[in-house]
Image (cartoon, rainbow, N blue to C red):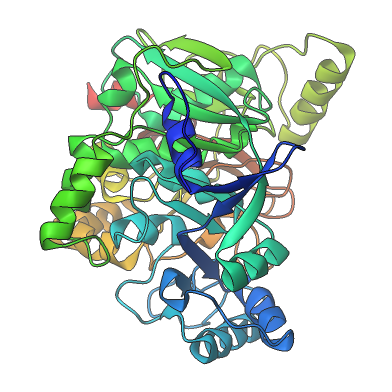
Length: 471
């Protein structure tokens, strides 16, 4: 399966070469797939199509399923789902997963959580593995050094039946982050700044490796935040070379190698990095020194500026100017307005982007001893039940609740509007990854930001710089 290559290789080339079964002349390759994850929004379709075709899952021990996208996250989950008609999705996926004999993390399982949060925290996602899921943010686990990407339902069916997928080989891009950012500037700020500078299609057709001193200094969870939004950069996937931080994060996880197998795996993982002299098709650079916390003003992640900046004036080519003006109209903004003067109605901390334990700690540092501004609806949804339990063991839930945040159970929640609860008609600051029109409810105006910025904004009642409150 390994295709020999002469000379230094990038991390991506090593991962692709290790999984390439055959290469076609049209630029596509047949890749071996190590892990497949499903969720209740798409899992039933793939599993039912497979059953109706009379095909079995080739490696059921490598397939997993979770309830996360439309589950009710209110304490006790009184409604089971927040989506009208969603009960059928949940019950059908439960039955299909059980019939197929794959591992299911159901609503009441203590390991339940958002798919891209639990796959690394359980050790299902590992450095060097290929992992696919019918969800665009599957690239999140590239933060461990995995080769992961989102697929469609038909592709999920094919991967389940054969353990392979036909994939067009992307080009390579290294995003190099230099300098030392302010402690309040997080991975979310770094990726928003990158997308703002190089656009939401800046990584189109590429596998992006995030590198440089600022990336090496990030914790594993921060690296997953970066890779999570590689798809917002237009990339095929994102990844960070695994190091001792990753090994420490993974050791002892439920599905990670144990004993002698761990030693062998860690030795192999230590080789998963771009060789000196490896050539990338493109390289982009971003200096993090002096960078302010970022916040979006429009309806694309590329519509982002420093929290201390002003709403920009539409500019550039005609198409870009028109898109910027449409965004301004939808968001109800005018060029020149100070971002810090924009009053908010809601604040949300959650999603596969920013709902891990370090994210909740960062927000709690801002909230401790403070209260959410009057008339601001504030909600925190931990990324998994394990994250929730760990946060409660540290007393973080009491900090959130004392500040006026709702403390909920795990799920995708209001990252997107599923026809139930949302922020319809509100201006919200959110730790999520997407801000297109109506994403969080009809007429919702979403400003993307880090958990620290969300917390600071909730306290001020307007978009706010977390550096001020930390000082």
